Amino acid sequence: MFSSILIANRGEIALRIVRACRELGIHSVVAYSQADERTLAVEMADEAICIGPPPASASYLLVERLIAAAEVCDVDAIHPGYGFLAENPHFAEVCEQCNITFIGPSPAAIRRMGNKAEARRTAAAANVPIIPGSPGVIENDRDALTLAREMGYPVMVKASAGGGGKGMRVVHNDGSLVQSFHAARIEAEKAFGLADVYIEKLIERPKHVEIQLIGDKHGNVVHLGERDCSLQRRHQKLIEESPCPVLDEELRNQMGEAAVRVAKSVGYSTAGTVEFLLGADRSFYFMEMNTRIQVEHPVTEMVTGIDLMREQILTAAGEPLSFTQDDVALKGHAIEVRINAEDAHRNFAPCPGTIEFYGVPGGPGVRVDSHAYSGYTIPPYYDSMIGKLIVHAPTRELAIVRAHRALSEFLIHGVTTTVDFAGTLLDLEPFRSGQYDTGTLERWLESTR
Image (cartoon, rainbow, N blue to C red; front, side):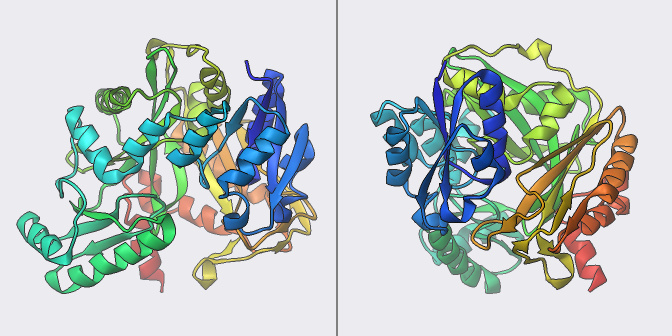
C-alpha cells in the first residue's frame, strides 16, 4: 500500500481524494496554486505544497512542477483526479520514469483511447458498434466534403483529442462544412495542442449513456452499470442519473459487456468510462472512452454501494478488485446535479466572487461533494463548478422529489449560482418522463428566448 499520495488537482475532486486517503491511512499531499491556498482540500490534507501562480498553465498543467512537488514531499503515487493532466500520457510516462505510481491507466492505454480516431478503431476491433464515419483523421476540407456527401448530412466534425465539447461542430450541408472543418481544427489546436479532426454521421436525438468500468492489474475488468448524461448544454453535462430510465436489463448487459471488451483490449487497469450514443431504436454506438475518474462517479457509488475512489487507489497499488461482476447490483435510483457559479439568465456567464454564506442540504439519501464554504472566494481562473448534489432513493420518482427538496435547502449568498435553474430542469416534461435526449435542453432554451 502507498504511504503517501500527491493530489495533482483542485476543488471538490481534490477533497474527495483526501478523504479516501484518510480512510485508507495514507498520507495526503495537495499540490495547489496560489489561487487555491484557502481551499478545503489544502486545509484538510496532511500536507500541502504550492506549485505556482493561479493560471493552470503555470501550475496544474506543468508536469515538471508536479514531479518536483512529488519528489520534495517523497510520495509513492500521484492521483490526477479529472481534467488538467488526468489523461495526459506524457505525465503518466514521467511518473513511471521517476518511480512514482500514476493512479490511472498505463500511458499506452491513455494514448490509444485518448485519441478519438484511434479509439474508434480499437472499439471496432473489439466488435463494438461504432458510429459511421472516417476511418481516421481527415487531412483537408476536400476529403471532408467527399466523405460527408457519401455518408449524407447531417454529420459531426470532431476533434481527435480532448473532450468537453471542444472542437465539435454539427454540419448540415456543403456550405457550412468547410468553415466548420477549419473552425474545429483551430479550436482543437487551441484547447488540446492537436488540430486533428475526424467526421462522424450525426445520430439525431440520441441519449448519451456511459458505462462505468474499473479494472485491476490482474486482468479483471468489471462494469458498474450505466449513467444517463443526456441533459447537456453545449456538450457539458448538467444532470446525470442512474439507472438510465429507458434501459432494461438485457440492453444494460449488452452495453456493459461491450464496454468491458473495449477496456480489456487495451489492458485497462483502473477506473474509466466508455461512452455510447443510444438511438431511439435501441441501437447503441461507441463514442469515446474517458480514461479517468469522472465528475459524476458518485451517481454510480450511490446505486452500487461501491467506493470507486477507494478501489481506484487500491488497484493502483496492485490489489485485486474487491468484488466481481456477479457482485454488482443497482439498487434504487440516484441523480447528480452540478452546482455552478454561473448566471443562467446571462447566457451562463461565470460568477466568481466571495461566498458570504454557504449552507448545504442534508437528510436521508442526500450527499454534497463540494470544496466551498462561507467566506470562500471562487477564483476566476478555473471552471465554475462549486459542488455536486447527489441524491439516492428507492425509486426515480422519489429521487426527483428528494433532489427538489435538497435544492430548496441550498443557501448560497454572495454569488449567483445554478441552484434555481437546476430545479427548473428537474421539472421539464421530457426529464420527468425519462424521454429526454442530448438536444432536449438546447431546444428548450431556444424556445424560451
